[in-house]
Length: 117
Image (cartoon, rainbow, N blue to C red; front, side, top):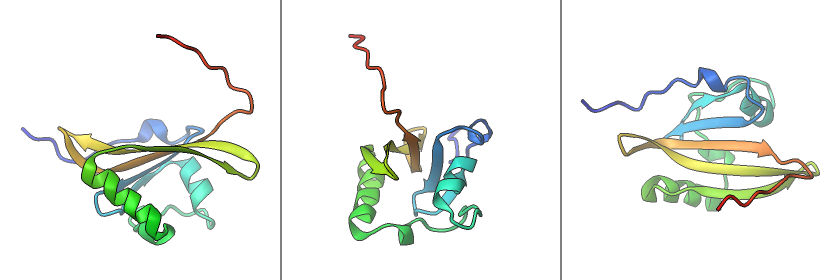
């Protein structure tokens, strides 16, 4: 039996990481509280709306590449004087790409690094 592209993100609602999930058409299907706080100026969820108008042509091309090639996009930014890690990855069910997940989190000024090889 093949699984459908359904999910339950109740565990993520109150995390201190912004989590935004879209389907393969770029329609937002989930935002946790932190994502709404950061991305929605009026405080209302964007679930059901396309994320494409929020992105420039370069970003839309990256989104298309992630969906078409099943690859991640990871980078850091500085916003309001704080460093953030952005991790974007396809989410899959039985190997089928069902959309993208973005995790956006602030990085502490001083962060330990361990080599565990």
